[in-house]
Length: 364
Ligand SMILES: Cc1ncc(COP(=O)(O)O)c(C=O)c1O
Image (tube, rainbow, N blue to C red):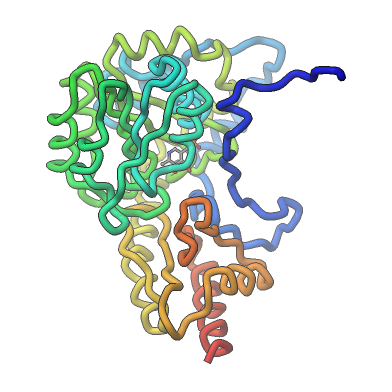
């Protein structure tokens, strides 16, 4: 019998993270399944693209100082601590590759982002789950899960898919309870949407050797298709990750667009206000229809279908899909009674609300 190549055991057993994006050919699809920017992308991005010199045969610089300076200026940071990457997903993978020996543990929260356990497993590590309290991360449970083999703690704040937020005091209490060799990853993918601000994450990175912060251009900055993320690091960790990141993992167009996006404050302000409006309006309007929606600090909600007089999440996702509205099922997170919905444009949100109204009327 011929023996065929087989991947290492950890990879063979992996449950892969697969986003729900629908049929890309369907232009009329209202896609509210991937927490993307509701308002598209910044006008300055298009302007920058038009002015961009057409140069395809040259590699770009491995790290764009111009991009890092623009990010540092926008958020009041030290540019030397920034490392950009092919989406923050790449940074999640790099930190696992660099800091997990086989069998080392990385803790993530019960309803934390699914890429955390996936990247841990691929690197040869062991993902350890810390139970949430309700739908919110529990600092006590994370600290109780720390063992001698723990090397990394992943905390998405606000968290995807729950939209819940831990306070600064709680995040600092978590850090204070960790051994100094354990890295605390602050995944701030949705920080731009948080009204009270999240700048304390950067201050923690500057103050401690074991705190890193990951950010993305895929959410409020509207560049998900370009794959651009960045991290803020203690210099030693930055150097380690820079040494293993593929040298050209960011393409030229992403660099140019990133600089323009970060400088377009008017677009960011507009996106923030739009999100704020729907953060408060959507739960109220859904309650009038008879559906319960969690409070969110990000650009998406969890809708709860566990109640008595409501359809199941499965029925609801199908009903919406038949109307060309794509929502995200939460079965992979073991939240089977919930659907996640991203905040869309005003028009999309009105269509969604009417569809839910119709669904509830049909259900009576
Ligand atoms: C919590 C969290 N972290 C990271 C990412 C990945 O972002 P990127 O597109 O920069 O890879 C996402 C994307 O959904 C996310 O929800």
